[in-house]
Image 1: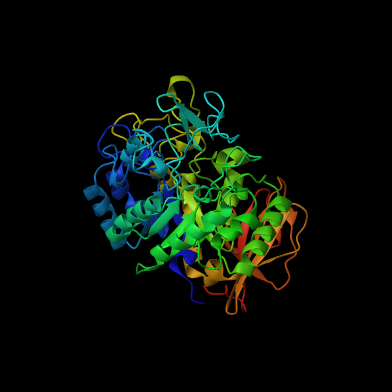
Image 2 (image 1 turned 135 degrees about the vertical axis):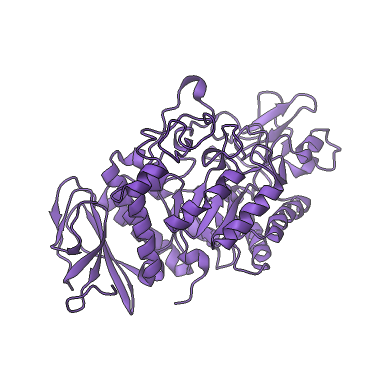
Length: 513
């Protein structure tokens, strides 16, 4: 089966502030990423997505962009990025970067020009409205993170400007063709440098109903969906005009899979869109069975490709949400065997939990510091960072450091590596069909299959052992989330919070061993 690279890939998200510090200021940087690309190659991922590193005042830690075409000195320089990109490509890794089209920083030259008054040539690059005067904003939209109106009053000109997030993040007006052209130019800047694609921040918000009507929600999520789809088709044409299968994955933060599916268009809008319900799903077999069914039912009629993610920089890590490392291990099996493109968040391969961040250590206005704690690389007190990092360490940074996990063949890092190796070797896991199986209560099972390749995945969400009758055996255990399971044949038993991948024996030999 022929598939695009981004359909077969596993993408690894890097939050650059917390990955690795090369220059000794306590904040991760581009050179720190480049220094550890060997870890990612050893692990077996195919691509990296780097969260924003553009010039920024850091009100929202890089998601408030003051220059879309430069690197903030905190992270390095354009030359550092070019070296990182070249080295990643040499090692066979694709590189996606984070593009933030809905809003800029209030320190961006465009907005500073807009602030100069109603006669500014860039006044209409943002949403300025009269409203009903001080204290009475133009509509009822609410800002994310901080609550309150999504509008800030400018007493000098007696108008309001729109910001779906912080006041330091004014929304760009994509109804203005000059904004569209300028933002397209920022994409070309990075495409010309050789990036392989973009993760696009809150892309569903870029199109807004020009009337800016009151809505039922805190953000104008769907007030201009009809406009957004046209803008996405233009973006898709631009990205597809470059060689090498460049790609896009959209953050469409709408917890309705059928609605998210529309942002794929008819293979003419987003290449991929994040599937966020799993970030909120309980550790229950029926919840996951329903989520998988819903996702495939929504996407397959459009021939759209799913994505799967368990953790990211905005959400508590799944190790924290699920409460036990055994569940985090089973979740790794689940994530990397579903039909679609999996996204790993840096540190989940180490089994990291959220840090406890309190008092003066708090940094993020949205309360997301815990999942952004720095990665421990070594077992020494500094954990591979030259100075104390910008946030506290996650729990047990010694035991969950890269060095300790590399030395422990039963550790979660080696489980991830085994899963990624199996995924590379078995096309059924990369592009095969997924068929749900009838299983006992508390167990999720599915078959991944192609005409010449087949594997069975079983996940026991319950705390106790269970037996599962899978027809068509005998089977052998390709991978188990339980490190003490004896290799070889499978006797039909699953331990509590265990996941296994089974291959069918042909005669007395494993299927393709």
